[in-house]
Amino acid sequence: MLYRISRIGLPLVICAGLCPCQQVSPTDPAPPAATESGESRRILGILPNYRSSPNLQHYTPLTSREKFKMAFGDALDRGTILSAASIGGENLWANSNRSFGHGAAGFGRYFGAAYGDLAIGDYMTEAAFPTLFHQDPRYFRRGTGSTWSRLGYAMEQILRTHRDAGGTQFNYSELVGNSVAVGISNAYYVNGRTAAGAISRFGMQLGVDSFGNLVREFGPDLERRLKRK
Image (tube, rainbow, N blue to C red):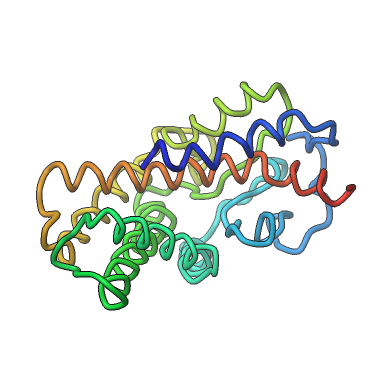
């Protein structure tokens, strides 16, 4: 799964990183935008972008209600639904869970399971555990520096996150939240209630979130380049 996601993510990073577009400095005021965070709700018109914020200037922590609202928006976004359909179709092709069957009915079960994985993961990592651990689920763009430094920064955010009270700490919400989501998924993965199956689904969740960070870091740069053309 991580390999499949990287086939999409790396071209995006390279293209955005090499484009000669103006970058957003973490110390500059946020530009006018369509959302409170200052970023478009969707990158490239498809991928959900409810979690990103352009910088840390004038930082204000989210309330618990705002965290759950963010998770709700991500879970119901059309980009999440399309991702679930893509993952479900690939798992159907690979016959990864024989109890789901084949054909349209089988695809419906695979799609439902994939969507459940993504939606439950959103609520666990963006709302429930960030509220419990007092952590901020948003991704704060770096926007400056070399492509490789920004790539490292984006990947680091899977393990490090901002605290509501300020500063950073280990991203318990990401790791614990996805672990709980995988545990819940055992209820509908009849043939996947094994250690290998759990590790595979946990890796998928981390892969999706890692790809999401890459999109949030480099996507706005690519959008500006495409608009100029």
